[in-house]
Every structure is written in structure tokens, then in C-alpha cells.
Length: 370
Image (cartoon, rainbow, N blue to C red):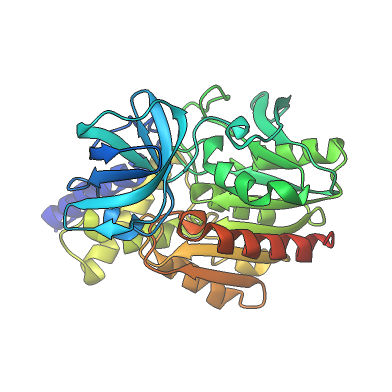
């Protein structure tokens, strides 16, 4: 009996460590793993033997970065087992050199800040519970503002795709930061607790928007930012939020861990489930993370606004099953748009024009400003 307890404790502690690592901020370094075989002002041929998601991203618009420059590539027009030829536009710097391990795909698709899109913006500062936070503010004349909340290990650059899609609609946009972001106030543990505490920073951003004249707000959350957005919508007073746009949101951390547990555990079934339960218990002891509180699917009845939800069917970060379960819980509110054969947060990349139409229709419908 003691041996069984010891094994469960050891396995549970290991699982709790994996869970905590998934909540930790990790400033990832760019890994150049794509070969540049030829390039000119309009076409590039790439060698892709090391690209993990290329099977799914071959028909997507993607950013391409290298030392000294950044470009954008369109869907592949010629494909072999190890190469792709794609339309190419240089956005920043000089053309990439030819050679092995020169470039890296970037799903954010644009570099820098909104100026790359020719969009006027300013960096604003406002108070939040742990200290002042910064945000990009793109001005507009509409009474409804868009507040955008990025995912874990991302930054405001994630929403350049959104700005590109809606810049002509005249909605003011606030692309926010939150605690533990770079140059933002930090907690002692530097962890993101799936919205359990971060929702207060969204609340501060919405307060700022209202102080600047916003009569209503649509909150857009991507990945972990989607979980934070759901937490805000459930924890904050109702009224100001007219709708949510979510892309692959971390809507149920318990379920995400369960669906991804094959990566960490050699055993499934009841034994695996019990080890996961022990792991969640240890994660709670070590971090204070309340899995019930961040189970937004179970709390879905607390929502009272329309939700536009994008989700890649091949997403391994937040599996598509999470979207299906939430829609089943609130079919009256959730408009789910599956993105076929797409991985994590690729709605714009897979179909920029379709994304623009869908988001525009939703914004105009919930804001009443069409």
C-alpha cells in the first residue's frame, strides 16, 4: 500500500510540474529552422524538413522572419516532400540570404506594431491592481471599443492580424498587456493562472476604455487570453460587454490537461485519470490554482452575451474538443467557426477575407453600429 501511495505521489508531483510549466511565462527564442532555396521580390522557395506545422500551414498566410528582415508568404503554389514555393512580400529589412536554417515561420504574420499596417496608434498607460499597464490604442469614432487580450508567451503583436482585418470599421481598439508580461507588474510566481487573477487587468482596461468614452466593449481573447477573457466576462459586473470573440480559448484547463495527458503519462484510463487528479491537487497546493474556478465550460451558464468562437480542428495546444464542449453547454450564445486542418490560432492566416467578413458581421451585429 505504501508503495502505491509513493508511486501516485511521485507521478502526481511530476504531473503538477508539467501543469505549472504550462502556466509559466517563457520568453521563447526564435529558432531558424527553414531553408531559403531561392527568393526574389514576389516568390520564395523554402526547404521545410524541420518545420513542425508545415503540413497544416501550407495553405495559410504566414509571417517569415530571418536575421535582418521579415516578410509575408501566401499559400503554397508548388509543393514537394521537402519544399514549398510561395508568394512573397518583403515587409521589413532586406531579402533573406540563401542557405540552410535561415528563416522561421511566424503565425502573427506582421512584425513590430500597427505602423507596419499604416495605422495610426499610440501607447497608453492606465492603472491596474498591481501597477500601471500599457496598451496599444488605435483610435476610432465608434462608441463600441474592441479590447484584445493576447495568449501566454505572446504579446500585442498577436493582434496585428485583427487590426489588419478591422482597421476600416472605425472601432477603437485597445490591445492590452497584463501582469507578468514584459515590462508589466509581476507576481511573485510569474505564473498565468488561466484568468483566475488576470481578469482584473482586463477589468482595468475596460474601465480605461469607458473613461475615454466607450459605451460598450467587445473583448477578443486568444488562447490563454481567451480563458482570461471568459473569466473577466464571468467575474465582472454585467452590462458594458456586448460580446466576446474567442480564438482557441483555454476554456477548461482541467480538460486541456486531460486531453493532452498522453504527452506526459505512459498510462491512460482510470489509473491515468487518478494520477491527473493527484497532479491537479499538487498544482493547487503549489500555486493556488483553482481548477473549478477556471473551468469556464462548467461555468458557461454565467455568460449572458454573444460569443464568436474560432478554433482549428487540428489544434494540439487547446484541442478542438474544448470548443465542442463549450458550444454544447451554451448553443444559444456560441457561434462556433471550425477552421479545418488548422492548428493553434490560425483563423486569419487560413482565410483573411473570410475572417474579416465574419468578425465584421459579428461586431456590427452586437454593437448595433452597422
